[in-house]
Length: 172
Length: 105
Image 1 (cartoon, each protein chain N blue to C red):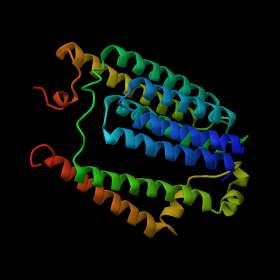
Image 2 (cartoon, each protein chain N blue to C red; image 1 turned 135 degrees about the horizontal axis):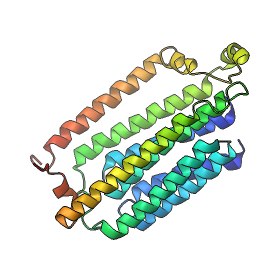
Image 3 (cartoon, rainbow over the protein chains, first blue to last red; image 1 turned 45 degrees about the horizontal axis):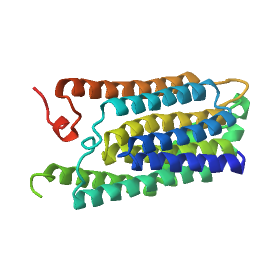
Image 4 (spheres, chains in turn brown, purple; image 1 turned 90 degrees about the vertical axis):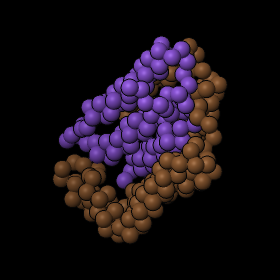
């Protein structure tokens, strides 16, 4: 993959983040989502995504258009969002998202550091470049402690968020 | 893993995190709907990355139909969300998410 396509993929992720963050403003949110979809489309098609990529891109584009249309017609912009979350809940939820990002980064690092030479040799006869076995082998093998720790921390913070949400609006 | 597959898988995972943020942050209806869409799209991106690594002359396009099904499920989920929005507006005349949080008998 060329550096330009990698940069396009990074832009797609940033635009998707912007579309989520700008959710209170319909037009800005949909515009950012559309920019993200266009960048993703470029990356997927250039990478040889084939007809699943075309189908997903066309369908997602149609869904964005529908959300925009329905938003213009129906959404009461003053009341389509919930009030600001309680501080403790927001802290616990933010922590869980950071841990989720850590878990995802760990997964990505496992992919990046995976030594595929033995797998490639084993699969050469079958004509495969990689198979799913090495992913499980990494997570239940050398990365077992880290993956378990991230999972436990994530579960604990999500549980704390849920417990805090129960009392929100009644006890605080 | 080839660089293209690795980049697509990493990008898809990052997109999945963004989607979960939009969905669970629940700051607005639009943000949640877009989060749902990006969540299923991230599954498709990771799947295409995985297929790119696996594709060969022996089994071209293996698993591609599964990705189409994933994309279809995502689209149907958004269609269902929009249908709920329409039903609430028809019944209540507005879309007040605090009011929508109450269960109806």
